[in-house]
Amino acid sequence: MNPLDLLARWTVPFLLAFIPLYGYLRGVDVYGAFIDGGREGLSLAIRILPYIVSIFVAIGLFRASGALELATHYLRPLLGPLGIPPEILPLMIIRPLSGNGALALTTELLHRWGPDSYVGRLASVITGSTDTTFYILSLYFGSVGVTRSRHALAAGLIADGVGFLAAALVVRWLFGS
Image 1 (cartoon, rainbow, N blue to C red):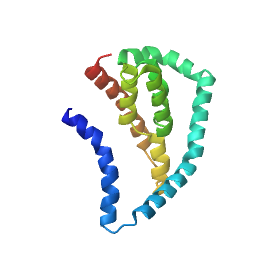
Image 2: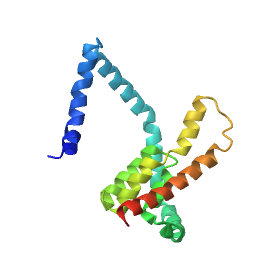
Image 3: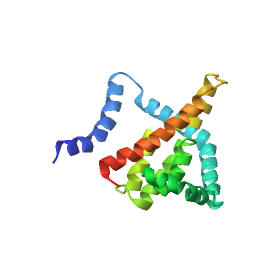
Image 4: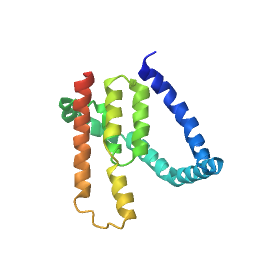
């Protein structure tokens, strides 16, 4: 067996055994910390659930209204020469808005086109290399009291556009189209 395969196979079980054992040896109440973490995770899931539902409803409305097909139709001549298939356009629209929505779209693209397809690879790289600009502006700037974001929105959207183009170039360069 390849040493890298062996490492990949045993890393997660090792960490699952090592971390609680290390905590126990340091005198941490491991079970109590596990229960507290589960409680916080459940609380977080309940807090973000309305946002996830709203994004899915918005995406569904965007698709059902025909706006997605219209945008895809008009942007196809622009995206084609850049190496971006029209199937990726919904992901490019949703990614600056919501990481969870983008992850759902990426999962859908992977199920439909396969993880080894050009669309699957490009969707994966876009999801991993771009950020949720609007989420960052609203949550992080709001949490520290920034009221005038100045050029942050423009800079974030330009960075997203550059990330989309770079993802297309890198995927085409590494895997072909």
